[in-house]
Length: 213
Ligand code: ADP
Ligand code: ZN
Image (cartoon, rainbow, N blue to C red; front, side, top):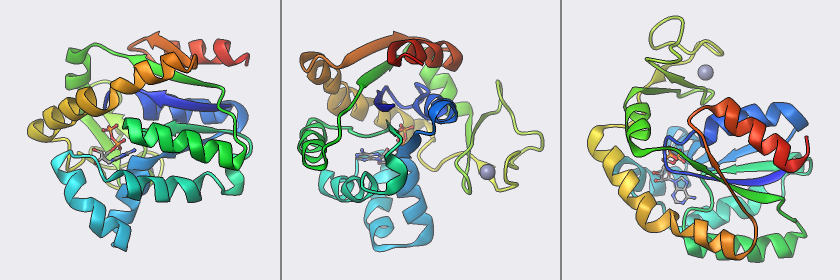
């Protein structure tokens, strides 16, 4: 399947994407994970992105489009992909449309995951992410077996630097201002499917039904 997953930070895009990859061999493409990898590796891209990310600001569209143009041409995308955290602005969505036409790729649909704001805030403060394999945990609802250690790879499962209260509220404001308008954009394109759901399993099942799996 070829999907865009839209939703506020903490709506569960990453968790849903990981569950969907197991169904049909589609790959998860998370621009956030790619950027965090670049920051850790200390590449030029990472150096440029670091400051924006720490503040909870968006990285410039041109950097993101450079990443995605390369990523979408890698062979593992042929079976399908789940775009998680991209596009995030109207200019990115417009550039993606041009890129897809150029590469001859047709999207199945755009899924918007709607979760109430209080649930989101609670989730983001209690989320822990493995810096090595990006597995996602939650200290309340899905803790690691050993505190701070990833069950899957043994790497450090810690609170992201942009998951302080100040950065979280800034990320949510940025989402409302820059990313929420994409819902209307894809509605006009006739591609949008909205799913209300705080449970990832409910969201995954609704997507399965919508794409006919
Ligand atoms: P979340 O969805 O939980 O906020 P992500 O991992 O998707 O987190 O993104 C983390 C940070 O990476 C964002 O706050 C932003 O700085 C940067 N980022 C990720 N994807 C994009 C994008 N498509 N455009 C601009 N910045 C991005
Ligand atoms: Zn891990």
